[in-house]
Amino acid sequence: MAKHLPRRVWVEVDIAKLRSNYAKIKTAASPCGILPVLKANAYGLGVLAYAQALSKTDAAGIGVAEPFEALQLAGCGKPVQILSSVLPDEIEAMVEAGIVLPAIDLKTARAIDAAAAKAGRTAKVHLKIDTGMGRLGIPAADAPRTIREIKALPHLDCEGLFSHCPMAYDPADPFTDAQINLFISIVDDVARDGIVFRKIHIAASDALNNFSRARKPPFNIVRTGINLHGSFDPNGERTLDLESVLSLKTRVAQVRSLPPGTTLGYGRTWCLAKTSKIATISAGYADGLPLALGNSGHVLIKGVPCPVKGRVSMDYATVDVTHVPGVVPGDEVICLGGEGAGAIAPDDWAAIKGTHAYEIICSFGNRVERVFVNGDDPPATANASKIPSPR
Image (cartoon, rainbow, N blue to C red):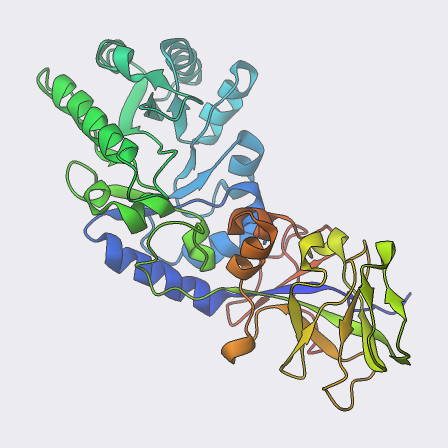
């Protein structure tokens, strides 16, 4: 049998920091319940380990985007809720699995009701109202009438009512306040007929930070995704004292002393002005390093910031280690993470790339091993990495 070789690139997810972030979010949102959103494999970091950690909290459930994600988590000990849409040929299986489903229009609600009748059960649904996102849901103008029709369907437990905000990252923009007002007017309208919902939510991570009224009555649930990882949208307030849960690491492949005039990488974007010690590290854009890091960012080697010189390639990047003694092949390189003034957060890469932390976290390639530290035993499935021997 071939000897197991450690991956050249790995991302460490600190479960203790994840739980700490959850606790801080809970305190900030109190008395609202918390619905962690773990879509896209927990933003690419390993959903089963996340779900295992959060199943031991008082989370109101687990939010996902689509049925495959939902089925992965069925039986995790928390209600699993699809927040986006469910297609006609997916409904029957989702009802049978007990997944909480979004009713994005009357036709979908009727199909869920029919599937529930066929299965001899009641299906839980949250009615999704489009108050201005323009993507999915019951148009706000039609909402009171449609809510009344859906509420009358006999095999549905209309547990929740929710919406989503496209501008909540900007506390100065009046659009989100207008959305909240519109949503509350719909809640009040149907309440006059005695229609009430046990779970009402509009706030995701941005609104949680920027719009305190989105966590006050009638709202009693908030959703949180990117904040769990300790990241924020680049705009808006950062009212929560959160820690980044992840570190992206690799190793040095080669160290060379190169003379003045040497150019580095594709496009020859960097020319050495003097003799320099250059380390080639075993990670590139296929592993999630942004191309924009070239000649702009840094990594940490032996705890020292080392600037990236030249263009980042698919598998490698070159960094200047002239000022760091004793760097040899195999040394650990921290691409994201670290401590102190040189620490690098996903938000820092997002600023360099001109994007947001969501894209950075979701960009780690499939050869990047996911490693979970400071937590319980990892889930025994292929979807969550086993913790390797100490490196």
